[in-house]
Image 1 (cartoon, rainbow, N blue to C red):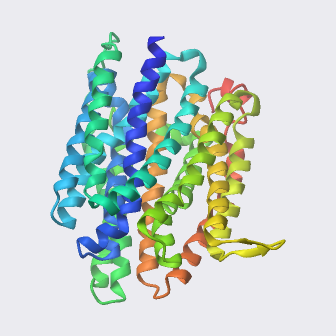
Image 2: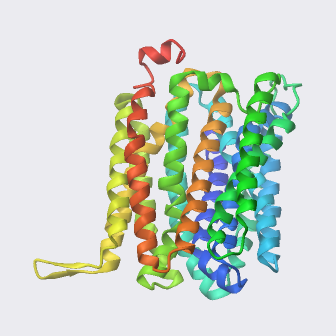
Length: 464
């Protein structure tokens, strides 16, 4: 019974992260106006958070090895809660972005730590319980936009960050009581801070170059700054790869990427993160800009995706061993591609047999189908390579999250540049959604390089 309560407690942390992220997406247009800032600078509220979680995720598993699962999990929760308070009291966009960085240090550790804890508690049914994490996030995506949309209109955008404090306190209480002190031999290896710094430099330089690229046409940023940023990103990247090959305890185990399944899985995770997760976080802005919806309506429009994802991911998790990995990923991704294409067309309703199908109803259907597609493919994508090295669940989960979050950050950054530099919002979102659909379609063949199922020959051979 205790281990099921442990699953519930770590799931509550993931739920907290999901509620916060989806509520911020709804509050994004209001924050931009209230703090009198540009779309590109405001985009760093989400991009900055994802940038830092990208760095934290591969470190989280190693930190747990050094400190123990319980202590590390409690530290992540405390940092997330402290960051939330700082966000709520931030008087300007720059301090808000800085506070989101603190929040992200805690939030980035939730998933790898949770996967490691649950893997130790349920070694015999690891796929099912890690897959069930995919049904936790949609619950937050239901609560976050609806509750967040109401709170933003009633109490202001700061209220969505104050909401995290009582929820964080509950997570801390449960973790303190339920998680056992880790009796395993703790690792004496140090965290690779040099590698983490080089990785941060690579991603930050790339993100800065992409976002500032959108300001060059308006003369706000000289081309030389953009060029230097891209050059720095390349220098940092090659230095990072060279360092990781030489250090004893790398942030990213480069040997993993010599194995075709790991490389294929993370190429998919990057593109899926950009086209499905990052771009979807802009749907509230899409609803407000293209359809003139209110903040509350833009939050409600996300609900069908969450319900669809929750139901589909739960069903897929229970049948994952029978269905395998490739089939759900391909089917789910195709559904997402179709929905992105439909969003690009910006439907305005139609008459069906004398019944008027309005815009809200049509968007509910499309967004709901998108959620089903995401719910079918996500549990399989989460588990696709874990069985190749079951002793490194936290590390593999961290890498998967890193590539998915990095893709999401790039997707948001590029999309905001396109929207910022296109006078017609409808045309801008047409480009963004259509390009995302095409990129996902092009990437689909890499799924064939992933393990077909938990029991396939490739898994037995260790993914070589």
